[in-house]
Length: 190
Image 1: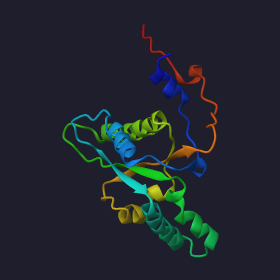
Image 2: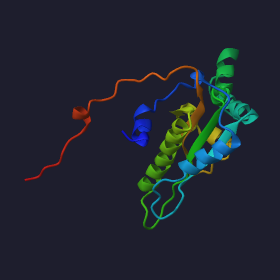
Image 3: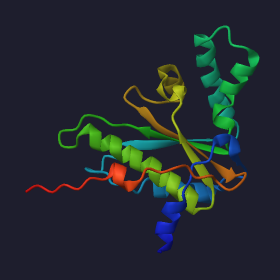
């Protein structure tokens, strides 16, 4: 089997709490982002961008998340607030893939959304190819406008993924995958 197919067949998500450092180097990060940006993009609109959270930036973003959480849960205890504050510090590196789709005379927004999803998946696969592990997550804060505004997203932008990246603490576990017979049909019109 070609190495590329084996790579795709062995990719697994690893929980952020099971990712450790060191994360990718600056050069490796540039490669990951370059691979992530090599996706179908009808009209060359680049309907996505990336926000990199590393080092103290992960905790600064966590302060934003914790503040929004506390505003909605004023009775939260210190442990809950601390958990929210560490949302983006669970892995050595987090890359947010941001969808920046907009109306266009020729390119449907749906195609732009799919391109953003393809950028996130390319990133996840590139992380695996580089020997790291990843987890694509969109938790509550990915949909909270206060958080998005504070992280610098424009009004029309949305989070496609927060991709948590690091080294797995152990071999990633697989999960049951759907049998092809349950997800594949063949069109045959007579």
